[in-house]
Image (cartoon, rainbow, N blue to C red; front, side, top):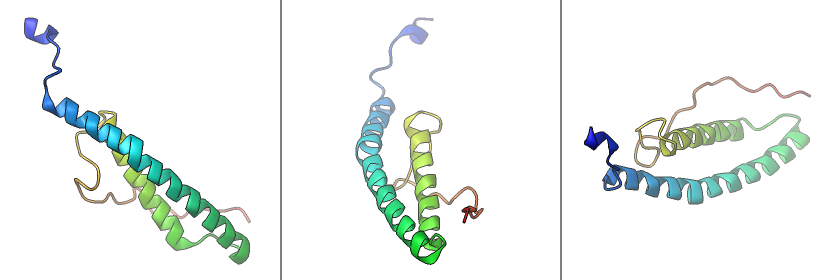
Length: 102
């Protein structure tokens, strides 16, 4: 019974996950936010000029979404699978093309 009540602050996996959380939440998601902002501007310009969004940018943002999703699941203890670059780059969940109102 006592071993259930003892704190487990000494477990290395908890501290390692904290390092990952700080790294991903503090640095990686900041870079993702910058990328999304750049893609937003580029996609707006391309959609305004050509009348439709760029397919490559749509695929890129879908990949970025999958990466963010997997990283968030790891740092919030929803999965033990480490995100990229410690595992393979996640493939997008769905390949449905978004419909943009014209």
